[in-house]
Amino acid sequence: MNEQTRIAPNNLEAFWMPFSANRQFKQAPRMFVAAKDMHYTTSDGRQVLDGTAGLWCVNAGHCRPKITEAIQRQAAELDYAPAFQMGHPKAFELASRLATIAPEGLDHVFFTNSGSESVETALKIALAYHRAKGDGARFRLIGRERGYHGVNFGGISVGGIVGNRKMFGTLLTGVDHMRHTHDPERNPYSKGETEHGVDLAEDLVRIATLHDPSTIAAVIVEPVAGSTGVLPPPKGYLKRLREICDQHGILLIFDEVITGYGRMGTAFAADYFGVTPDIMITAKGLTNGVIPMGAVFASGKIHDAFMSGPEHLIEFAHGYTYSGNPIAAAAGLATMETYLEEGLFERAKALEPVWADAIHSLKGTRHVIDIRTIGLIGAIELEPMKGEPTKRAFAAFVKAFEEGLLIRTTGDIIALSPPLMVSEDQIGEVVETLRRILQTLE
Ligand SMILES: Cc1ncc(COP(=O)(O)O)c(C=O)c1O
Image 1 (tube, helix red, strand yellow):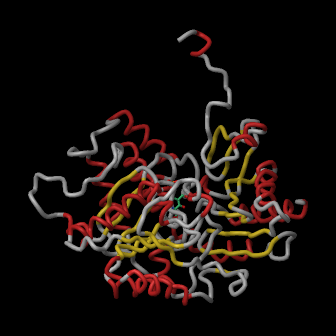
Image 2 (cartoon, helix red, strand yellow):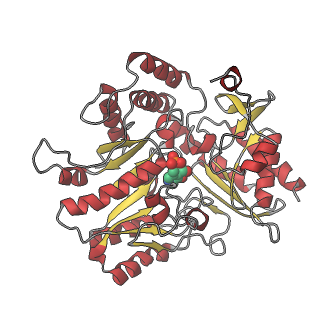
């Protein structure tokens, strides 16, 4: 290696950025170099208010001391322990801690490194559970249109976002999809669960009848679909899915990667809606986004079905080198402590009506055609530019960044999900910045 290659120039070319317009970015890079609490600092020294908790993950706010210190301490004490056939105390402690805040009955935790890995893990647990019980005929997985379950093959197979699927061949077989629940004509400008659409849960009956219910292993849904533009469920919809699953021996999987850890003002969306799944997928807010980690929760019934056969044999042939990594586990424990000490879930709950009123005050603003809020989540749907879908929302994203606000866009929808420490003044700032920007957009 010569001197020139060792001291690499800060060239933007080598890094192939994920889910990004690489060429556009590299012409006018948007770089963060620091963060604290509710703000990022840009490379040109500006403060940017975080309207999205990073990518729906920094629920406690940025660079929180307890989490930072826990990571530093753990890195110096035990950096890595093999994840297979060996253990370390913090992974067990975190799993126990998580089981205490999980909906009742979801008392076993399998660690992964991301939402996508948690999805694959949950689907595999569901399939293997039926096999372990001697019911291997249950091989089908049912997802939903507009669902987002990460980017791995299982997740894009049960997911329902065409753009994320169309380039990648045949995907998993034995998958079917229910219709999505987005119906802005019947549910315009909604706060909380929508009024109309409980009937859409009957899609599961239709699909089960078509394939024979005894061939279906599991149904997977996001309690609130996030990445596809914030689609709250219709009133009674999730309860009805639960009933249908119970009736036919189908497992219900909730993907709570964005709704988990306080985003809804409750620990999980399962608590918010009063519906408990058999398997619950989480990641993001588990470590406040600081270190990659995911956790899949399973009921005792599911876990125990695997615990048979000779005791020296591995019961579930699945896991990752970094499952329950010590530094991630330390971050997870410190994150849970921060949530608890600062009462952040309760804070989100108290803010929900304030948030909803503030975001809905944008009704009537130029380009706005629908608004949806639930928990500390908001979506502002814009009228697409003629013949150029997504362009207007992307312009809003760039302009907001220039004006000191981080938002997220998906299609022509602006999605908002601030850290749970957001103040009422900062909510006002988010709304007024957006109001100003939308007036000026083409
Ligand atoms: C509902 C849902 N599932 C899965 C994922 C994938 O998570 P990750 O990007 O950590 O793989 C996401 C990410 O946004 C998500 O929103």
